Length: 356
Ligand SMILES: *Cc1c(COP(=O)(O)O)cnc(C)c1O
Image (cartoon, rainbow, N blue to C red; front, side, top):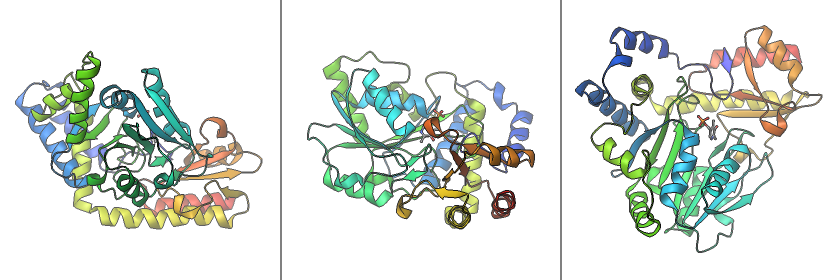
């Protein structure tokens, strides 16, 4: 069982949906045909219902979240972007913007902490603010309420949120942000190779301005191309059809189960993880501030290094994540995604306690 923070264990219905997809020959259908259009519509409708997207929010498919790190500055920023950096993923977004010639100003927080985003001084010429709501590399999360307060302080600035390892578990009011994006191999428990970029009309407006002023070369995945095709329930290029099919099915299953139930279960399993980190002296929770602890990725430091416990667990078929980047050898990361059951999490925690 994979408890790694992405890719992770597949959502428990994926195998069945995949078998069905092969029977229907989904990977062979034409991406301009009526069957695909129907499939695309079902996926975007299920996703839109699951995330309760307000009217005017569009769903576009990309290759990954990493791609969206480029698409956002490319399409939505003329000169100045601001980003909160509190770990590897949030900082990579800023670096992607810089590489595109955007003036990207970063606000750095110590890894293992989250910025109080609404209290930070942000220059008035900033056009877009980006952050990772759930910094998967450290397990530090930004409460959505703080993002809403940030919006109140900067009503005219676009807000783009990386929700790769928290959506749809996190309860995010999309009407208070302008763009969000994720890859499907984390909380949705799907095979990797598909990204989702959600954006509103304010993003489209801004993109039109940027296009006029910068004489942008329109890429195949420009926001305009993505939007034009999405409205026809198509994509600019031949997409990951199987991935889009599976995402629609899993979003449908999550709708049937109910997000309330999924969120309650997540909270209960997260309590198990943090109780382990606090009660077992071998571990120290990496995020000290409780309100900033991620519910979907629990990270602990382990004195003497994480390798022995990680390999002992692997021998028992329980695969947990090691640390990310500079914390590779020191940390253990446990993913707590919707596919992980309470029983599986209890088994993992009991096994860890018996080994350390
Ligand atoms: C995994 C991850 C990404 C990158 O996802 P890809 O699918 O590799 O593009 C970006 N941001 C966060 C917070 C992540 O956890």
